[in-house]
Structures are given as C-alpha cells and as structure tokens.
Image (cartoon, rainbow, N blue to C red; front, top):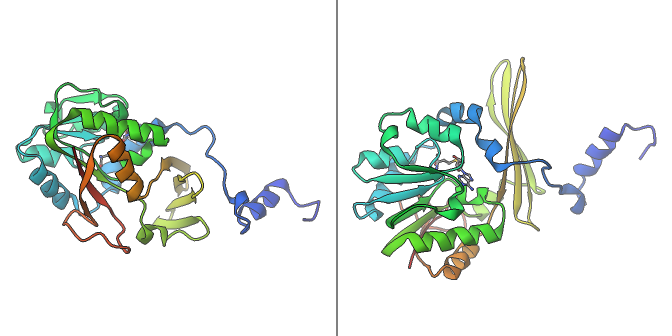
Length: 271
Ligand SMILES: C[S@@+](CC[C@H](N)C(=O)[O-])C[C@H]1O[C@@H](n2cnc3c(N)ncnc32)[C@H](O)[C@@H]1O
C-alpha cells in the first residue's frame, strides 16, 4: 500500500477485499428504536406496500378463532388495522411512539389497546388464541437470549391450542442476493434523488447491518437497521425451549410450499 495514500482510501480498499475477517465490523452507536423515529413513521406506509397484506390478514384471521389477537411490533398498523376491521380484537406492543402515533391517527386506530414497550416482555394482561410477529420484526431483537425470552413469554400468554405466527427467517432464496456478504440495491432513482439499500451480513454472529440512504440535493438521510437473523431451524429450537412446536411452515401468506427457493418463511407454533 503506498504510504502517501489517504487513510480513508486505504480503509476502503481493505473493506472491499475478499479477506473475510476484514469485511466485518459492528455499527457503533446503533440504537434499535432509532430505526423507527418520526421521519420513518411518516414515510413508512408509502414505502412499505408489499402487496401481500390481504393474504396476511386472511391467514391470521383463519387462526384467530374469533380473537383476541396480539401483534408484537404492531408499528403503524399495516396488518393490525385491516385484521381488526374483520371483527377480531387486535392488541399490540411496540416501543416506537412515533409508529404507534401514526397507527392512532388512522381510522379505527384509536380503538386498539397498545402497550408501549419491548415486545420480548409480552407485558399484557390475559391470554390470546393468536399472537403474531410479521415482517422479520423478531430479528430486530439483537440477541439469541432475548429472542428465546420472547418465545417463552409468548408461550405463557397463549390460550390452550393457541398459535404463535412468526414471519421471517433466513432462507437460501434471500441469501442468494448477497455476494461476498453484502449488497447495494437501488431502491429508487429519480432525477435529483436516489434511495439505496446498503447491507452487509456477518454469518459468524448472524448479524445484519443495513442502512437505507436517501440522497437528495438537500443532503443525505440515513435509516440504519441492525438485525440478528436466524434460520428457520433455529426458530424451531427456540420454540421448543419455550414448550411450543412447529405446526405449519409456509413460503408465503397464500400457503405456498416452503422450499429451498423460498424468500419468505411463515412459521406457526403451538403449545
Ligand atoms: C418493520 S416494522 C413492522 C411493523 C408492522 N408489524 C408491519 O408489519 O408493518 C418493525 C416494528 O417493530 C418495532 N420494534 C422493533 N423492535 C422492538 C422491540 N424490541 N420491542 C417493541 N417494538 C419493537 C418497531 O418500532 C417497528 O414499529
């Protein structure tokens, strides 16, 4: 390495090298709640239109046995509000006040009972025939211990025969998009603005470091997200530790078979 090369350039060359160990570093100073601040809450619904919302609601409605249902990480109510509109009582937990304020501002949002706090505690009264966590939100919990604690607390709040539905899990279909442990995706390209998804994962620690970067002529805005991902088989073991077992596994909300090519995983656990 030439000695006159600026340090920043030297670092860049080392980071993109194929040497493995040098590729990994944590996102210092990251706080999970920062991913769901006011600006994110404001734009969340416009950015997150997946197209499988109706199928998600129909799937959950089938399992709810009339309710009540509890959504962990209820967010802006993308799923909770249409599920509640079917007549099922839906309660929720979320630690982001801006996300919940957005939910509350929508039709029907003021009627839901929502606990502001860490969903791993499942600090609610009563029990539920259906508890669910969708959109990989279980992986916002950054340690295996806390993910197991979440399963255990859910198990203690399920009615006999009740179901815990988890959407998320590492799959080969998703991993295929990641080359040398990273990717950059152009999410949106306008004339004077771009939105990029910049991602690295560390398979040794099962940590995923991601930042959605919006660059406009007024500057850049960063939305960092860190997740601790798990393979479906690890989720099954967490469930077993909590006294639950896998009842169903699907590759999508329309009950597509789960295969090696699936990009989504829906797991239904029961006591
Ligand atoms: C990707 S959003 C999903 C929101 C909603 N479930 C949906 O499908 O649109 C993740 C949500 O999880 C919440 N969250 C993440 N970790 C949490 C935790 N440990 N306790 C409570 N809420 C959490 C965030 O505040 C955010 O609202």
